[in-house]
Length: 294
Image 1 (cartoon, rainbow, N blue to C red):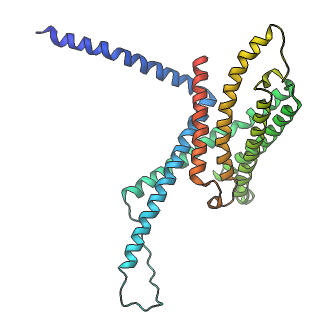
Image 2 (cartoon, rainbow, N blue to C red):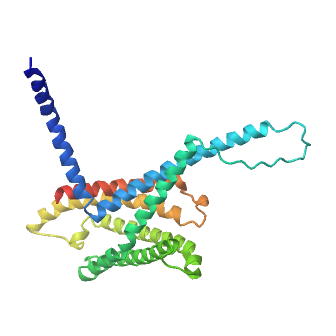
Image 3 (cartoon, rainbow, N blue to C red):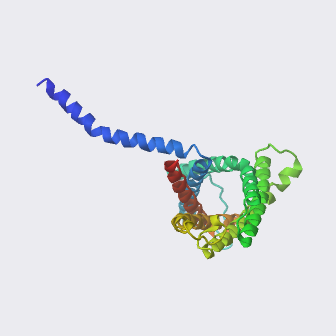
């Protein structure tokens, strides 16, 4: 009888051992993924747009709740009011569970947005590296080379304006000149980001015309190298498809942010949130697989 609990414990540990091994492998892989800049950026993107989309939906529900409250108050107005008489009432928003949840989600969204933009402060270094690669190892296709230079130029302007607007908004860059330009720079940074996304779409279209073989300078291979080119072209096609999904997601985000009044955006908050979520998830999946190959 005394050996029965020990035997049961051993059986339980035997059953839990595979789960523990899988958990260890998952956490180790996650650590490797988040040890890369692309992994961190994709995770922040995914978390931010998840919170952004959630807050947008909660705010819509809260607005409807307040509208029902206002309608109820109006229906209980005194019956002795004259026909053209107007009653004004200023009420504090009721601190319901929905209100508290919406407020906390907004705070989380702002925090993630600041972290996301702050992480991109060093983006100009990546843009410089892309320009350097295009100069030292340009693609053999002239249109591709031109499109890369256009993408680099638009990206550099976007990153500079975003950095300046972010630092001015946080009080790092002080003075009336910075404060007055913060709003305009925010909008124009998104417009140049949108231009960068459009150029990237054209580049991807050109790559498709070249049968996904931009890494070979759009030159035909012959002899023994032909088989290797075909094998690598399959991987290039797969990478191209993911890049298309990511770029399509950024189209919605950047187009929405290009409007000075985002309420007039043709995309809307839901469209921008879904677009950013797609870009983040696809990028995170790519970083996850690259961490496994490393």
